[in-house]
Length: 354
Ligand code: F1P
Image (cartoon, rainbow, N blue to C red):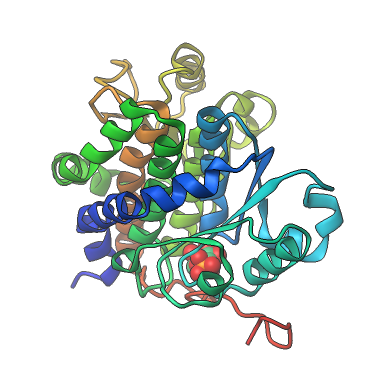
């Protein structure tokens, strides 16, 4: 038996094509919206898409040159004065598969009251509350996944956010690299699926995901995906942070997954060799381009291509989703429904909730 989330993961290239097509179709609307002066971008969402916002904020700051931050929507909902800009010309970027999560709806309403006509949505459902609230909506219905864990929806919204940033910034190299990704994905998945299955079935109990810069948000999402799908305790850290405390609990029952970046390579490699010296047996090193040729690492997966660090995060994502899936299979769990979770959260009794 396979689960819906497996089909979503393996078949997500078609949703990626829809992402590229949706942004291309709205290119002039996007260009007009971002032609206005913007002094800060605030990304906001709940759970998985919040982590997407962490990565997307790094990209937009680099590409567009504006200050860019990410905050959980509940922080804006509960503490707007502490999170929202006091003034200026900010833009709020909401990210929501359903377009109905109460905290994100409330955050968008709080922002729009202060800064009208400056709200963007990346989503997967048309005519949702957030779709109606947003002044610029980039919605990819083909990317919507019906199960609890976000897989193709997450990666497709992330691809759309990256591609929109590349078009706004006129970064033709990044835009071209992103347009190639859907074609390249199926072979990447088929080449490395057996390794990810083997790692998912190995003798570890908890997991630590390490990523820097734009890859930290992807590392945080990978930890949450493993938790949601396989009920496994998993955490994420900025890669070099691991020496500043977390290393104390990494042992022979810990899977360490390093999301390597091109810019961080020498330092990130050193973290891995340090862990090896501390006899950490379960290490998966995801590496850009043709890899780092790491000796002694349990598994290294070079994703190939000469992509910018941001786009490398999209190459890593489906592999990390497969790892979570195979861990759930190994533990005999249903990854589609997880436990005590729902497709999205609507807070009872909260205006804009249920
Ligand atoms: C967000 C959410 C996530 C959770 C899971 C299901 O909903 O509830 O918080 O981690 O991925 O989706 P949405 O606002 O994206 O619809």
